[in-house]
Structure formats: structure tokens, C-alpha cells
Image (tube, rainbow, N blue to C red; front, side, top):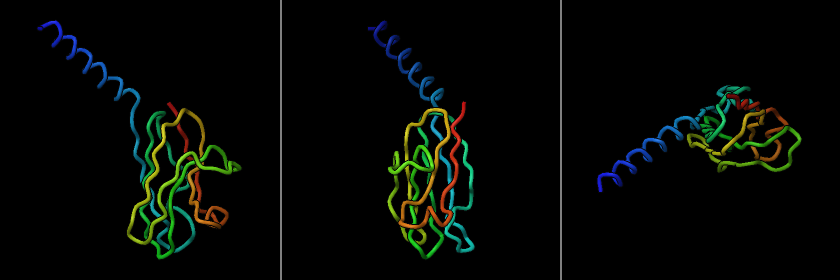
Length: 122
């Protein structure tokens, strides 16, 4: 019985180390406070692994946050809910090292400037 408990404790410790090593990153942005169709940041940096982007909408216009591989990609890897003023849109994905685009999927918003670069690096 002691061996089983010891093995379980070692396994639990190893899982915690793996979770910490893989990392989980949460990054926060807001819609532009001056009313521009934009985010308050143009560049975000995260470590590989689980990445969560949270966007607080401070505007009257509805917005969301999404992640896609490149500027010309047609579909997002993940997208958050479209939200109104005072609400938060959230998008979570497991990402490898590389460059991605975060953007608003509301029609016309990305073209108007509501996008930025998400750099995932070790």
C-alpha cells in the first residue's frame, strides 16, 4: 500500500512539473478607449502551450477576439463570443512557437485595424 501511495505522489508531482513547464499564458487587451476600431495593443507575446486572450470591450460597438495562423487565413483557430460594452470576450488555444494574428471577427473590423500580432516563443 505504501508503494502505491508513493508511486501516486511521484506521479502527481511529475504532472505538476509538466503543467508548469508547458505553461499557460493569459493575456489581456481592451478595445481602443478613444473609439477607434482597434485594440489597445498591437503585439502580444506568449510561451508555447495553452494561451488565453481576454478582451474587455470598452466601446459601444460590439467586438470579440479570435486567433488565426496568418493575416490571409480565412478561418480562425479559435474565436470568442461577440460582446457589448463592459463584457469580456475570451479565446483559448494550444499554440506552438510561431507568429499568429489576433483580431475581431465582426465584419469589417479587422480591415479597419482591429488586429495585432501574437508572437509565441520559447
